[in-house]
Amino acid sequence: MNAIPNETIAADILGALGNETRLLVFRLLVRAGRDGLNIGQIQEHLGTAPSTLAHHIQTLVHAGLVLQTKKGREVICSANFDTMDALVAYLTDQCCKGFC
Image 1 (spheres, helix red, strand yellow):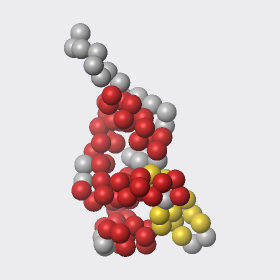
Image 2 (cartoon, helix red, strand yellow; image 1 turned 30 degrees about the vertical axis):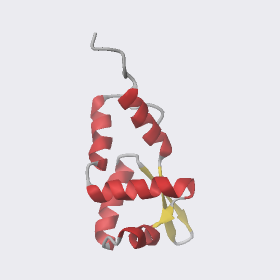
Image 3 (spheres, one colour; image 1 turned 90 degrees about the horizontal axis):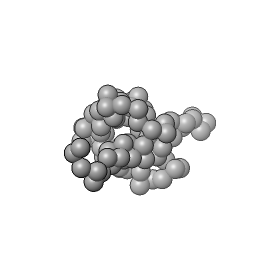
Image 4 (cartoon, helix red, strand yellow; image 1 turned 135 degrees about the vertical axis):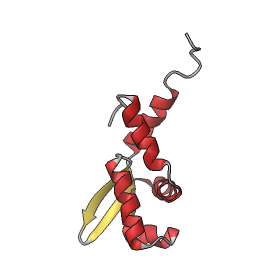
């Protein structure tokens, strides 16, 4: 995702982050960098029940904030830095341009 095209998509992405657990997951994955973490590692860091964690990760995937790749039998989750950067750019695009 190179740019956030409209307010609806921006609101959907922000809505996905509007939950404490999802925000913790996303921040953890940002800290993990492009290599990401497997589901077990995320669970270990956060102490979240597997079924609850799966639900929150799927919400982040659907919003485009998390990418998942398979490595053998493991699922690796990583932050989608392109979406994160596009969201920050969208939020700051009109910064300091006044109200006119």
